[in-house]
Length: 81
Image 1 (tube, helix red, strand yellow):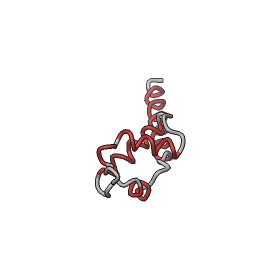
Image 2 (cartoon, one colour; image 1 turned 120 degrees about the vertical axis):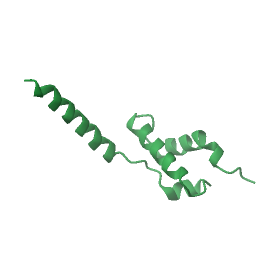
Image 3 (cartoon, one colour; image 1 turned 45 degrees about the vertical axis):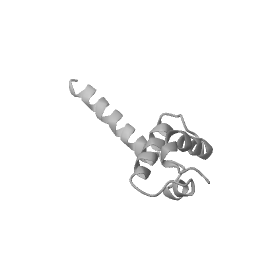
């Protein structure tokens, strides 16, 4: 019986990892480039932030992801003009 809680924890962690692996942002590096963000390590930060926001249920559409990137990473988007 002492192993049961450990098995439950292991199963829960396994399910969380599977869920994490299956959730991907709808935006890609090409989309970030189209938004005017220069390619670089910031892409990893942006895409990870999008993934976490999708996992939390805060983003459900492509347009929400675009708005999220524009708000949260505004400093990385060069001003037009």
